View (spheres, rainbow, N blue to C red):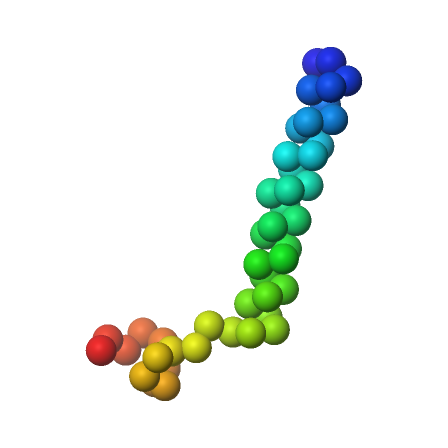
Length: 44
């Protein structure tokens, strides 16, 4: 693999894993709320 390919692979991995970490941190700070106020899993 050339140096350019390795750099692009590392950049892509940082973008993907960074997005995952950012999404998890956002969900920890602002959990998804149900519209009806009931517990998750109840249909309605």
